Structure formats: structure tokens, C-alpha cells
Image (cartoon, rainbow, N blue to C red):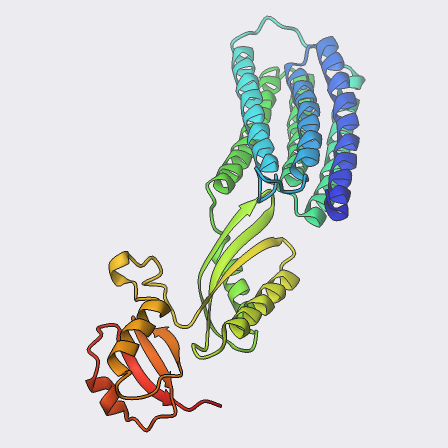
Length: 371
């Protein structure tokens, strides 16, 4: 594991561990006081806090495993473990929301329970609102710093707990005015808060698992940075996907068709370096150098492929050897044809060369003198 990845995992673990302590203490206090006061909403909120504790453990494990270096079986790394953990987190929350929803409906149908409120019920609920909102800001700060979707999801989990505690507090106040049904209504609100964040997490994780592209505005920003590199004519077929909050991409770079292979590759290296410098979350860039825009013919079938150098040299030597001394051929695969630069010292004309061959793949012909 690299030093940067190790540091990232350590920060995620430390931040989440602090949140776990808060979640554990809050959950126990809420459940105990909720049972004493017979507040269904407070007990439900306590269970929600304890479920946060379970997901905190999940985040810690995912932070450790997802930061492992790429290996032979996982050449792109282990970042998708973070995506999988987010999917599990969302599923757990959805199940918790379903349980709270069921219990709150039962509560509406049961008038037999007498609720005895005390100051402690209000105190623990207010403490929950303050502490969980503080945890949200604390965790989301590091989530943005590390660009971690999982850590950001856990931060929003804390904010959901904070907002649901506000709902519980509303219910407790309602009960103090003999509006018992408000306690059950507050539990319903908790269920919907949890379900909403669960569905959001599930949707985002699913989009990542099916390799959904970055938003169009981000792709346009990447294209603009690439086009700022001298020597690059155009960029097309930009394909992006996310993996654990990081971005992988491949793109086709169009350069002057007459430049050397090494110069074209160096232009590509500059594009990759410029994009990485501008976008920290892009960790893997694969570029393809094109002499022309081949967006429509990229997946050429065998019938559309032009012959390679060995065949071209053999055919043109057969056609032209009687007309001139052939020193070399420079080939340019453009427009579906092959443009040929013949290197020769012989006094031969283009008309003579073209009349001597009828190869269907032959494009423009030019005569070059050796240096």
C-alpha cells in the first residue's frame, strides 16, 4: 500500500471510529430512556443510532481493504470494495427503515401504551441532534478532502440521524400535550428519512457498479484541458467510469498524421499529465493516438482493414520495381486508404507510378528523395 493510500485509510478509520463512539453512546442512551419513558419514536431512533455503529464498522473495514495495491487478480485495484460497502450500507438502512415503518404503523393502531415522559428524554434527543450534526460536518469535511463517496455517505447517515432526532423531539413535545399520535408520526418521519438516504446510496452505488459516465459538464472540462496541449488537433471518444470515488478514463487523441509515432505518443503523455494535474480524482488514463477522427470506423471489421506494411511493400515492389529503384516506403493510413511516400533516387513520375498499379487500397502517392 502506498504512503498516500495508507494515510487515506488511516484518516477514514480515525474519523469513522470517532463517529462509532458517538453512535454507540447515543444509541444506548436513547433506547434506555425511550424504554423508561415508553417513547416508541425514541427507541426507534436509538436503534437507528446503533445501526450507525454497525455501518461504522463496515466503513472501517472497507477503508482498509479498498486501499490495497493492485495485484495480478485485481489490476485496477480494490476501490470497488468501497462501492460494494456503500451498497451494503444502503441495503442495511433500507431494512432498518422498513422495520421502523412497520412498528410505527403498529403504534398508530395501539392506544394501550401509556407514555411517561421525563426531562431525560428531551435531553438525550437534543444531545443527539447536536452531536450527530457535528459528526456530519466533521465527517463530510474529510470525505470531501479524500474524495470518498463511502465516507460522505456515512456523513449523510449522521445527518439523517440528526434530522430524525428533530422529528423525535417534535413527537415528544406533542406527547407532552397529550397528542400521543405525534410520537408514532415522528417514528414514521424517521423511517422516511432513513429510506430516502438508503435509496440515494443504493442508486449512486449501482450507477458506479454499471460504469456510468461522469456528468457531461465534467467530460467537457476534461476535453478543454486536453485541447490546451500544443500539437493536439482534437479529442473524441472520451469514456469515463468511477471506482470508489476515483475516475478511470480512456480517450482518443487526434494528432497531425505526418508526425512520428514517438512524437504522437509524447503529445499523449502531455495530455495525460495535464488532465491528472487538473483533476485529482482521475487515477488511470488510457489514450489512443489517431491520425484522423476514427470515431465512426473504430471497430473496423476484417473486410475494412487495410493491408499492413509487409503486404504493401511486397505488392508495390512487384508493381514498381521495373520503373525505379525503391529505397523505402513511408505509409500513412488515412481516409480508409494508404497514402504512400516512395523514397527513391530514380527519375520517375507520379503518372508512371499510378498507371503501373491498381491496388484498391492505394491513396495518394508522392515521391521523396533520401536525406
